[in-house]
Length: 242
Image (cartoon, rainbow, N blue to C red; front, side, top):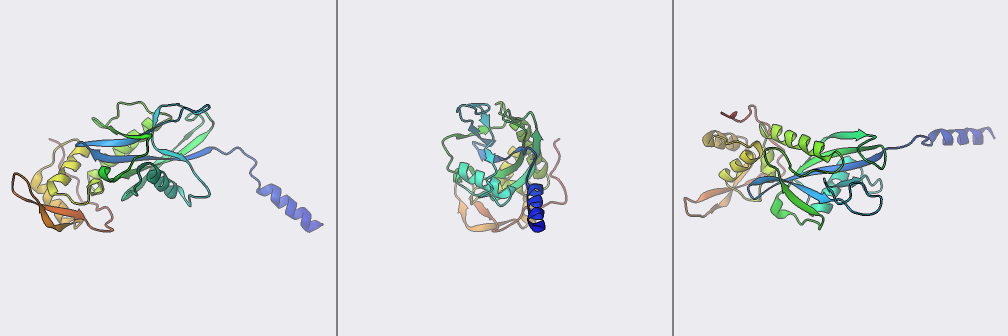
């Protein structure tokens, strides 16, 4: 009897007797399209009880405890569901939570940002690319997704100053001018050509492929990102704006 009472007491003690917040993961997905930095957004459903119906939002959703072993797995699943691809780069951005961000109740979201090749994706019907101009998005987003996106843009720009992250936005094969252009798009400023070339080639992050790109001018050497290559961290930032 004593053992049964003890087991019953432990069972009661182990039960959750407090309200649990809604837990979601949202993903800021960046790509370069039409010579601009763009972000993938989805349109919210219009069903009864849905918050922010038909508004634009970041891709994401609730954590599935049966499918997601951790938050990163949930972010990767949401990315794959919306784009059909696995990102070569996925980083946790931060967490946002309050009693006011979702009308359905107290909620917390864990945000990630991802870099993908735009031409490799196969988007779902509710997802579209939107350009970012001047470090901002003109469209208004649901929940606090505007704040999350602003943080992601700032994080990306800061890290591009001293890392090789733009290489993860490139197609399978590219030239050095192509890569420099992507750096310049993200940073929203020009970079000095010879200094850029020296830094990238000395970082041992890309390798030449056995072909050239033909065009109206002199043929250009094609490169690719080395397989399994982690982001490279440079000892100095790129040349500051003048």
